[in-house]
Image (cartoon, rainbow, N blue to C red; front, side):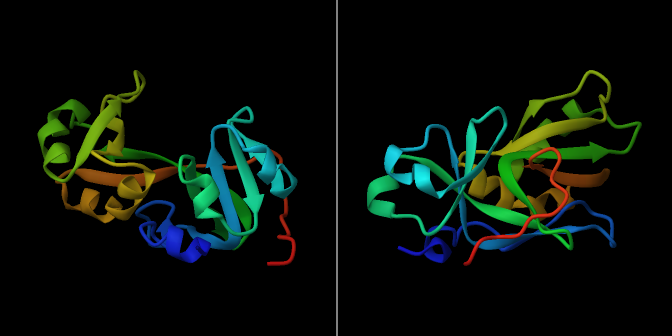
Length: 172
């Protein structure tokens, strides 16, 4: 199975936030990420690690028969820099300053999201995740978050390797 088929539930492009001039993340062909342990047979395909080595970026196509029990996501490239980024499924939602995020619990639940954390420093913001479902659900339905009143910004959490200045994908 090709990565295109495996990742058909993931958006091909994700805007970094609601700003009209915001950067975009675009699926990076011929790459995928494994969240968790990497099977030995895939070790030669590893390009690097993120998040204290809990997420590996690999090059190639996913063998769905040998990886069906793994948590696998596409790798995105931040345009125009081509910095590789891996989604976590967490989305940061910021409301108007006078709106407490916890007041939006029901509105979020109505569109399939749950609050997973409200930062102590910003009661008008929350980390949310699509529910039920995985990372693909969080990202695919991100546009629904715009329908909630008082939303000022929406940003998906995308992990990148610190220190990346340029990234050139091996042959795709």
